[in-house]
Length: 330
Image 1: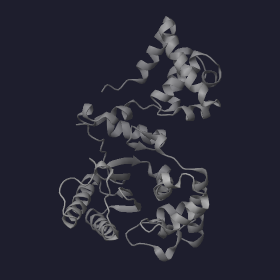
Image 2: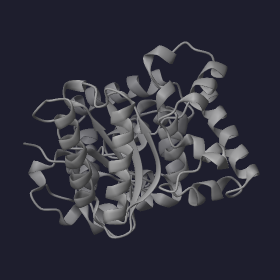
Image 3: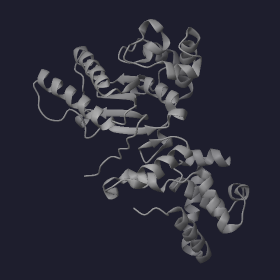
Image 4: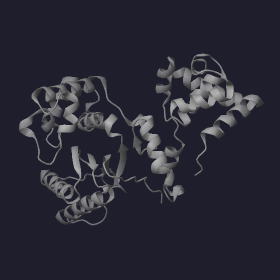
């Protein structure tokens, strides 16, 4: 069975999610939700884990936590088993409550902590039922949604002793009236403009800047055992930053980054393909980077694949570039 990539170190930050087995509910009523939060508090205290925010949905939950002692696996094992035991006993059931292992994304604290806190808090209005609702309706619903840590971020009277608000609010003016107002203003902008982070996650496991992903890859991922059993590890290990990709193409062709990205032809097409394949960028992001339409990126990537089969020189160039970008063996 394929295993998830688990990277643990002191001070690591994680976005954690866990879904009900077969997408079934994990809370039947508010008694379950209250017990869930009590169990969470117990586990946080036992393992000295810091909680920044949470959201409880009908069939899943989200947590944003930091582990000062590098013990995310122990913490999640205790937390999930304890709540599952309670839930099964109360509802006279047996078996798994959750769908497989919990999902954890290792997060670059300096770059994504505040963004992810808002992303987590927006979950109640990211459902189908709110797809065509107005921004005002979404704002009202979020302010009234009871099973979220958002309350404490926008109203000091609603602060929970379980949650550390100070670090996130520091980015908005501190744990003050102004800081809370600024946080909610940004939430309102996110409701209006949208907020997405999925496309920036490398290997479904790491979210951060190029430097952070490279550090994780070199420090932890490259030393992981049983690599073939962890499919997402391959994506982390083969990840290359935009600058790395362009440098390899430049070294092989004596063309500048500007020439590669702006001139029509096979080199720009190659950059598109390799940014997609190794840089973790989606077509839309590549199009924005190059000032093009998404359709142009899709079309040019297809042209490159066709031309590689027809042009022996281009095929050899592509092979050399890919060879340099694929240094890590799985």
